[in-house]
Length: 66
Image (cartoon, rainbow, N blue to C red; front, side):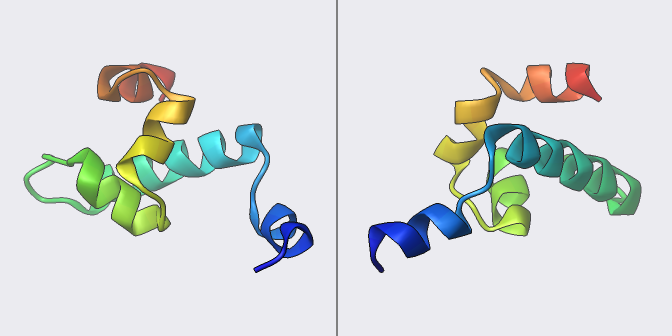
């Protein structure tokens, strides 16, 4: 993958942050036990757990933003 392809596939920080929050809300509404791990959230989005923490300092902050 060259630099131009990589740049095109990356989302803007604000777009990724919104995607994280929307996915978290969706998972909360679909989950029976309401226990959502950062691992499962990252997998649902298709990013690493570290990517989540680039946008939010903690899982608690994700919930606060919702």
